[in-house]
Length: 86
Length: 131
Image 1 (spheres, chains in turn yellow, brown):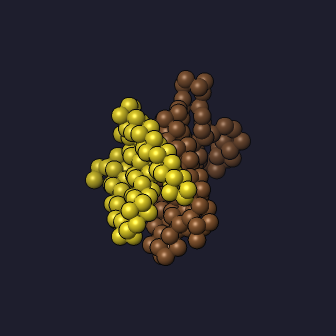
Image 2 (cartoon, one colour; image 1 turned 90 degrees about the horizontal axis):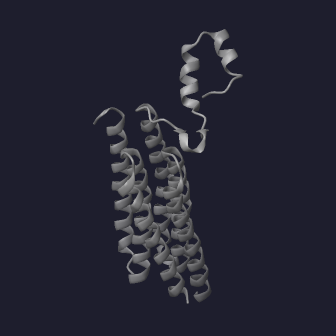
């Protein structure tokens, strides 16, 4: 039963990622796109944690941590680029 | 242990619902700043609930999940703040014409205007609207 509910949660998260991707496609400018990308990377972080649960390997949580570090750095870099150029 | 896994799965389902609400808010909100506030607050709470749910399902992984949760809790508001600051300084307008007027108060622009004013003018300006 617990695995079924985890699968339902992962399906909801996949739908959320697809909905956020529409904003990346139709965002009017760079600010909207980077906001949607920030939300989407957090959802992908949760998806990697779900994958660690589903496959039973805790090493994927390290992958999620490194992915979160790199996505945070990317958002800060794009914000810096919007503000005054790198 | 089975009960703990079921409780953890329900907590994860709640977190996934918060992530879905964040995505719907990103699509539905009329303004970049509104999209930013729904896209960072709701994803912070949703992903933290998801990690707590996985930590309930796998109690031996609690150290890595605690590190991930603290990391999300620290860096997600920080990235949202950096984005909002950059959007303000490139002159992104918070006005929404289709909703019949301004939707937010721009307090940072108000403070900057107040710092440029003389003292008696700024006291009069504090009573008015900041748009």
